[in-house]
Amino acid sequence: MTPTLVRQHLPHAGPTSRADLDARARDWSEIQERMLVPLYEAVYERLDVGAGTRLLALGCGSGLALLMAAARGAAALTGSEPSSPERLALARERLLPKEPEERAARARAGSDGSGGADIRLTARSPKDAADAKTPAYDLVTAFEPIGCRAGDADRLAALLSEAKPLAVRGAAVVLVGWGPPERCATSAVLRVAAKLADPLRGGTVRLRPALRDDLEEVAGRAGLRPDGSGRVACPFGYADVESALKGLLSTGLFDAAVSATDQAQVDKELTEALHPYRRPDGTVWMPNVFRYLIARTP
Image (cartoon, rainbow, N blue to C red; front, top):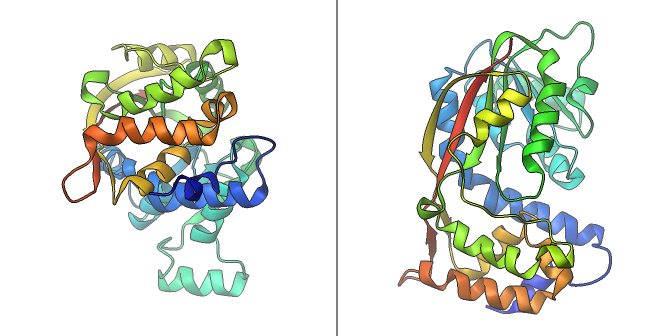
Protein backbone atom coordinates (compact mmCIF):
# COMPACT_ATOMS: atom_id res chain seq x y z
CA MET A 1 0.00 0.00 0.00
CA THR A 2 1.35 3.43 -0.92
CA PRO A 3 0.82 6.02 1.85
CA THR A 4 0.68 8.79 -0.77
CA LEU A 5 -2.66 7.39 -1.97
CA VAL A 6 -4.21 8.01 1.41
CA ARG A 7 -2.57 11.39 1.88
CA GLN A 8 -4.50 12.56 -1.17
CA HIS A 9 -7.65 12.11 0.91
CA LEU A 10 -6.44 13.97 4.00
CA PRO A 11 -3.61 16.52 3.79
CA HIS A 12 -1.31 16.77 6.80
CA ALA A 13 -1.22 20.55 7.01
CA GLY A 14 -3.23 23.58 6.03
CA PRO A 15 -6.96 23.79 5.31
CA THR A 16 -8.59 20.72 3.80
CA SER A 17 -9.51 21.37 0.17
CA ARG A 18 -12.97 20.81 -1.25
CA ALA A 19 -11.59 18.02 -3.46
CA ASP A 20 -10.19 16.25 -0.40
CA LEU A 21 -13.47 16.61 1.49
CA ASP A 22 -15.38 15.25 -1.50
CA ALA A 23 -13.00 12.28 -1.72
CA ARG A 24 -13.37 11.54 1.97
CA ALA A 25 -17.15 11.70 1.71
CA ARG A 26 -16.98 9.20 -1.16
CA ASP A 27 -14.77 6.93 0.95
CA TRP A 28 -17.34 7.19 3.74
CA SER A 29 -20.20 6.39 1.39
CA GLU A 30 -18.48 3.58 -0.51
CA ILE A 31 -16.48 1.95 2.30
CA GLN A 32 -17.34 2.95 5.86
CA GLU A 33 -21.04 3.72 6.07
CA ARG A 34 -22.09 0.16 5.27
CA MET A 35 -20.33 -1.16 8.39
CA LEU A 36 -23.40 -0.29 10.47
CA VAL A 37 -25.93 -1.97 8.16
CA PRO A 38 -26.54 -4.82 10.68
CA LEU A 39 -27.42 -2.16 13.26
CA TYR A 40 -29.85 -0.38 10.92
CA GLU A 41 -31.50 -3.67 10.03
CA ALA A 42 -31.83 -4.80 13.65
CA VAL A 43 -33.39 -1.51 14.76
CA TYR A 44 -35.77 -1.30 11.81
CA GLU A 45 -36.86 -4.89 12.32
CA ARG A 46 -37.43 -4.45 16.05
CA LEU A 47 -39.44 -1.27 15.55
CA ASP A 48 -41.33 -2.64 12.54
CA VAL A 49 -40.32 0.19 10.25
CA GLY A 50 -42.48 0.08 7.15
CA ALA A 51 -45.57 1.61 5.57
CA GLY A 52 -46.63 4.67 7.50
CA THR A 53 -43.37 5.22 9.36
CA ARG A 54 -42.32 8.86 9.61
CA LEU A 55 -38.58 8.91 10.30
CA LEU A 56 -36.26 11.71 11.36
CA ALA A 57 -32.59 10.75 11.01
CA LEU A 58 -30.13 12.90 12.98
CA GLY A 59 -26.68 12.79 11.39
CA CYS A 60 -27.92 10.98 8.29
CA GLY A 61 -24.48 10.76 6.64
CA SER A 62 -24.72 9.94 2.96
CA GLY A 63 -28.20 8.51 3.35
CA LEU A 64 -27.75 4.73 3.48
CA ALA A 65 -29.96 4.23 6.55
CA LEU A 66 -32.62 6.46 5.01
CA LEU A 67 -32.48 4.49 1.78
CA MET A 68 -32.99 1.25 3.73
CA ALA A 69 -36.00 2.74 5.52
CA ALA A 70 -37.42 3.87 2.18
CA ALA A 71 -37.01 0.36 0.80
CA ARG A 72 -39.12 -0.90 3.72
CA GLY A 73 -41.92 1.45 2.67
CA ALA A 74 -41.51 4.36 5.11
CA ALA A 75 -43.97 7.12 4.29
CA ALA A 76 -41.77 10.11 5.11
CA LEU A 77 -38.05 10.52 5.67
CA THR A 78 -36.15 13.55 6.90
CA GLY A 79 -32.38 13.53 7.18
CA SER A 80 -30.30 16.16 8.98
CA GLU A 81 -26.53 16.31 8.34
CA PRO A 82 -25.02 19.61 9.51
CA SER A 83 -21.46 18.34 9.99
CA SER A 84 -20.64 17.34 6.40
CA PRO A 85 -22.10 19.11 3.34
CA GLU A 86 -20.19 16.61 1.20
CA ARG A 87 -21.94 13.60 2.75
CA LEU A 88 -25.28 15.38 2.49
CA ALA A 89 -24.64 15.99 -1.22
CA LEU A 90 -24.18 12.24 -1.69
CA ALA A 91 -27.42 11.61 0.20
CA ARG A 92 -29.17 13.94 -2.22
CA GLU A 93 -27.73 11.98 -5.14
CA ARG A 94 -29.05 8.76 -3.63
CA LEU A 95 -32.47 9.97 -2.61
CA LEU A 96 -33.41 13.08 -4.58
CA PRO A 97 -33.12 13.05 -8.39
CA LYS A 98 -32.29 16.51 -9.69
CA GLU A 99 -35.13 16.92 -12.16
CA PRO A 100 -38.70 17.03 -10.78
CA GLU A 101 -40.01 15.01 -13.73
CA GLU A 102 -37.37 12.33 -13.20
CA ARG A 103 -38.09 12.28 -9.48
CA ALA A 104 -41.81 11.79 -10.06
CA ALA A 105 -41.27 9.07 -12.66
CA ARG A 106 -38.79 7.15 -10.51
CA ALA A 107 -41.01 7.43 -7.46
CA ARG A 108 -43.98 6.03 -9.40
CA ALA A 109 -41.84 3.18 -10.68
CA GLY A 110 -40.12 2.65 -7.34
CA SER A 111 -36.80 2.52 -9.19
CA ASP A 112 -35.11 4.94 -6.77
CA GLY A 113 -35.88 2.78 -3.76
CA SER A 114 -37.99 5.51 -2.20
CA GLY A 115 -41.34 3.91 -2.93
CA GLY A 116 -42.79 7.39 -3.35
CA ALA A 117 -41.87 8.51 0.19
CA ASP A 118 -41.78 12.19 1.11
CA ILE A 119 -38.02 12.79 1.46
CA ARG A 120 -36.42 15.92 2.91
CA LEU A 121 -32.73 16.56 3.57
CA THR A 122 -31.22 19.50 5.40
CA ALA A 123 -27.81 20.75 6.50
CA ARG A 124 -29.45 22.75 9.26
CA SER A 125 -31.56 21.92 12.29
CA PRO A 126 -34.24 19.23 11.75
CA LYS A 127 -36.94 21.79 12.51
CA ASP A 128 -35.83 23.71 9.41
CA ALA A 129 -37.04 20.81 7.26
CA ALA A 130 -40.50 20.84 8.84
CA ASP A 131 -43.45 23.15 8.34
CA ALA A 132 -46.93 23.62 9.77
CA LYS A 133 -48.34 20.98 7.43
CA THR A 134 -45.70 18.33 8.24
CA PRO A 135 -47.06 15.57 10.50
CA ALA A 136 -44.91 14.77 13.51
CA TYR A 137 -42.37 11.93 13.36
CA ASP A 138 -42.94 8.58 15.05
CA LEU A 139 -39.28 7.50 14.91
CA VAL A 140 -36.08 9.47 15.52
CA THR A 141 -32.68 7.86 14.99
CA ALA A 142 -29.19 8.98 15.98
CA PHE A 143 -27.10 6.16 14.54
CA GLU A 144 -23.66 7.76 14.96
CA PRO A 145 -22.15 5.92 17.97
CA ILE A 146 -21.08 8.08 20.88
CA GLY A 147 -17.94 7.35 22.89
CA CYS A 148 -15.09 8.51 20.68
CA ARG A 149 -15.21 12.29 20.54
CA ALA A 150 -14.89 14.70 23.44
CA GLY A 151 -18.32 16.06 24.31
CA ASP A 152 -20.24 13.78 21.93
CA ALA A 153 -22.70 12.78 24.66
CA ASP A 154 -23.40 16.45 25.44
CA ARG A 155 -23.97 17.24 21.78
CA LEU A 156 -26.29 14.28 21.33
CA ALA A 157 -28.36 15.21 24.40
CA ALA A 158 -28.78 18.76 23.07
CA LEU A 159 -29.71 17.50 19.60
CA LEU A 160 -32.29 15.08 20.98
CA SER A 161 -33.80 17.84 23.12
CA GLU A 162 -34.17 19.95 20.00
CA ALA A 163 -35.70 17.12 17.97
CA LYS A 164 -38.11 15.93 20.67
CA PRO A 165 -40.85 18.53 19.96
CA LEU A 166 -40.95 17.33 16.33
CA ALA A 167 -42.06 13.82 17.35
CA VAL A 168 -45.41 12.44 18.44
CA ARG A 169 -45.98 11.46 22.04
CA GLY A 170 -44.45 8.06 22.69
CA ALA A 171 -42.30 8.13 19.54
CA ALA A 172 -39.30 5.83 19.51
CA VAL A 173 -35.90 7.52 19.72
CA VAL A 174 -32.81 5.40 18.99
CA LEU A 175 -29.38 6.18 20.45
CA VAL A 176 -26.21 4.18 19.72
CA GLY A 177 -22.91 3.65 21.52
CA TRP A 178 -19.81 1.48 21.24
CA GLY A 179 -19.84 -1.80 23.11
CA PRO A 180 -17.22 -2.84 25.69
CA PRO A 181 -13.64 -2.42 24.37
CA GLU A 182 -12.96 -6.14 24.77
CA ARG A 183 -15.73 -6.80 22.26
CA CYS A 184 -14.75 -4.01 19.85
CA ALA A 185 -11.55 -4.74 17.96
CA THR A 186 -11.67 -1.27 16.42
CA SER A 187 -11.05 0.23 19.87
CA ALA A 188 -7.39 -0.79 19.60
CA VAL A 189 -7.11 0.99 16.25
CA LEU A 190 -8.84 4.15 17.52
CA ARG A 191 -6.31 4.36 20.33
CA VAL A 192 -3.84 5.46 17.65
CA ALA A 193 -5.94 8.58 17.15
CA ALA A 194 -6.17 9.21 20.90
CA LYS A 195 -2.43 8.70 21.40
CA LEU A 196 -1.28 10.94 18.55
CA ALA A 197 -3.85 13.67 19.20
CA ASP A 198 -3.60 13.85 22.98
CA PRO A 199 -5.29 16.69 24.90
CA LEU A 200 -2.03 18.65 25.14
CA ARG A 201 -2.07 18.89 21.34
CA GLY A 202 -5.72 19.85 21.16
CA GLY A 203 -6.96 16.36 20.31
CA THR A 204 -10.69 15.67 20.39
CA VAL A 205 -10.67 11.87 20.53
CA ARG A 206 -11.43 10.57 24.02
CA LEU A 207 -11.59 6.82 24.48
CA ARG A 208 -12.74 5.30 27.74
CA PRO A 209 -14.46 2.02 28.58
CA ALA A 210 -18.12 2.07 27.58
CA LEU A 211 -20.35 2.25 30.64
CA ARG A 212 -23.58 0.29 30.89
CA ASP A 213 -25.73 3.38 31.45
CA ASP A 214 -24.07 5.83 29.04
CA LEU A 215 -27.02 5.89 26.65
CA GLU A 216 -29.59 5.96 29.44
CA GLU A 217 -27.83 8.99 30.93
CA VAL A 218 -27.98 10.85 27.62
CA ALA A 219 -31.64 9.93 27.14
CA GLY A 220 -32.48 11.17 30.62
CA ARG A 221 -30.79 14.51 30.01
CA ALA A 222 -32.88 14.90 26.85
CA GLY A 223 -36.10 14.19 28.75
CA LEU A 224 -36.64 10.76 27.16
CA ARG A 225 -37.80 7.54 28.82
CA PRO A 226 -35.69 4.38 28.20
CA ASP A 227 -37.78 1.54 26.78
CA GLY A 228 -35.46 -1.31 25.87
CA SER A 229 -32.04 -1.89 24.38
CA GLY A 230 -30.06 -4.37 22.34
CA ARG A 231 -26.60 -5.27 21.07
CA VAL A 232 -25.65 -5.88 17.47
CA ALA A 233 -22.48 -7.34 15.96
CA CYS A 234 -21.12 -4.93 13.35
CA PRO A 235 -17.74 -6.21 12.11
CA PHE A 236 -15.62 -3.77 10.14
CA GLY A 237 -14.47 -5.65 7.05
CA TYR A 238 -12.23 -4.26 4.32
CA ALA A 239 -10.85 -5.64 1.07
CA ASP A 240 -7.29 -4.72 2.05
CA VAL A 241 -5.26 -2.39 4.27
CA GLU A 242 -5.55 0.51 1.82
CA SER A 243 -9.34 0.23 1.89
CA ALA A 244 -9.27 0.04 5.69
CA LEU A 245 -7.16 3.19 5.91
CA LYS A 246 -9.46 5.11 3.58
CA GLY A 247 -12.55 3.97 5.47
CA LEU A 248 -11.19 4.76 8.92
CA LEU A 249 -9.76 8.14 7.86
CA SER A 250 -13.13 9.07 6.35
CA THR A 251 -14.68 9.02 9.84
CA GLY A 252 -12.80 12.19 10.80
CA LEU A 253 -11.61 10.59 14.04
CA PHE A 254 -7.98 10.83 12.91
CA ASP A 255 -8.04 14.47 11.80
CA ALA A 256 -6.56 15.80 15.03
CA ALA A 257 -3.86 13.12 14.94
CA VAL A 258 -2.86 14.18 11.42
CA SER A 259 -2.76 17.84 12.49
CA ALA A 260 -0.72 17.05 15.60
CA THR A 261 1.83 14.87 13.75
CA ASP A 262 1.64 14.27 10.00
CA GLN A 263 -0.14 11.97 7.58
CA ALA A 264 2.84 9.62 7.18
CA GLN A 265 3.01 9.03 10.93
CA VAL A 266 -0.72 8.34 11.16
CA ASP A 267 -0.56 6.00 8.15
CA LYS A 268 2.35 4.11 9.68
CA GLU A 269 0.86 3.65 13.14
CA LEU A 270 -2.61 2.91 11.83
CA THR A 271 -1.21 0.26 9.48
CA GLU A 272 0.66 -1.33 12.39
CA ALA A 273 -2.49 -1.31 14.53
CA LEU A 274 -4.39 -3.08 11.73
CA HIS A 275 -1.80 -5.84 11.43
CA PRO A 276 -3.43 -8.24 13.98
CA TYR A 277 -6.67 -8.06 12.01
CA ARG A 278 -5.24 -8.91 8.59
CA ARG A 279 -6.26 -12.31 7.29
CA PRO A 280 -4.16 -14.56 5.04
CA ASP A 281 -6.03 -13.37 1.93
CA GLY A 282 -5.11 -9.74 2.68
CA THR A 283 -8.53 -8.66 3.91
CA VAL A 284 -8.97 -6.85 7.21
CA TRP A 285 -11.62 -8.05 9.67
CA MET A 286 -12.37 -6.38 13.02
CA PRO A 287 -15.27 -7.76 15.09
CA ASN A 288 -17.28 -5.09 16.94
CA VAL A 289 -20.42 -4.90 19.04
CA PHE A 290 -22.60 -1.82 19.28
CA ARG A 291 -25.32 -1.16 21.81
CA TYR A 292 -28.52 0.69 20.98
CA LEU A 293 -31.12 2.15 23.30
CA ILE A 294 -34.76 2.71 22.44
CA ALA A 295 -36.22 5.64 24.35
CA ARG A 296 -39.65 7.25 24.18
CA THR A 297 -40.77 10.83 24.00
CA PRO A 298 -43.01 12.02 26.86
